Image (cartoon, rainbow, N blue to C red):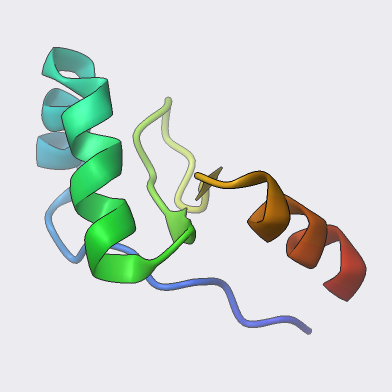
Length: 65
């Protein structure tokens, strides 16, 4: 099984607020901290939701699967 990329340890509810109020800033900060693929559980109650910030990273993700 593939290990999920890292993501913020900030409580999910606070991540959701940050994403809802300023999604571009949220994505930029997490990109800088965790790279081009990061886990961001900001939609519904999903514990894993991968964000991909670059097309090359998306290609890399599909090569692994």
